[in-house]
Image (cartoon, rainbow, N blue to C red):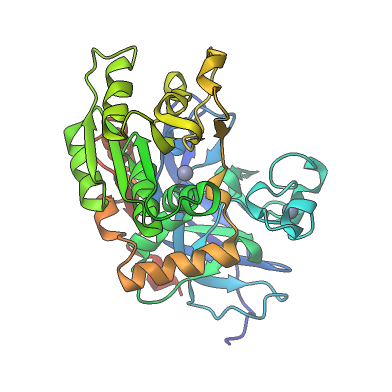
Length: 382
Ligand SMILES: [Zn+2]
Ligand SMILES: [Zn+2]
């Protein structure tokens, strides 16, 4: 382990939200780590629909919450990370002390998710971690991965297997974890079960991969775009349904699902579109006693006829695929190295920070499953 002395402030480029749906690129400075903090030089950052949403949040914020990079400096209390170690950043930073963390539900850590806001300091970096124009600035999800450097708590990073390139590894930290984890940790289908997924973007494709890993025999991919369905087929979908824009009642889709399942409906149906009006559609696709899973984080008021819940149907909205970092990231990495989890095919296009706007446009238009921003200088800082 190299000596830690001399780690000064680092200055690098970052995408800073304007609160009005846009962002600017500017330089921010990131102070040296103290205590158990780790400073990471970013190598790659995935682009997620939530990043688009974050451009309109109260800010300014350094944007981005999927990322991987190299340990560039550590605080004096970090003894288990070498400088230069490749790491994955995890936005659901567990405090390790609350009831949820202690019972295996780190994804819904009470200190990270507002139950105990006074104690947020136990899971995020200390004060004045990042400065912009002479002022302290916050980061999306306490990470801010669209930046050359980020300063986080030790609990926000997981060492990566060196066999996985960072541009592939970075997407483990949100989209892949959310999709694969929602299947394996939450739904827990058995071999031979049937599963439908509405929306085949980055999260939806990860649901397909999770279903394939679980041995689900009938994986029905549903989308408005044929190229999204083609990607789903490549990931292991067994049946494809191209939804007609005129099927606004979804009666046609529901009938197609019934036809594929001997009239019963699927055992599990997922929604990954982010469209609030579709959030309860999975209830119409599952059999009696089946499970509907909303993984898109869809917001907004929706009217739901109660009979959609009949009979004994369950509706769940897991956060981040029930991510338990110590359990889930090592196995996702192992599957990626073995080829059981296909990361390369998830990534449609890579970008530079200067072309982040194009990455967001491509994602919103459905041209990409996952776009990834590459930081060309990252490795040179460590
Ligand atoms: Zn906690
Ligand atoms: Zn995300």
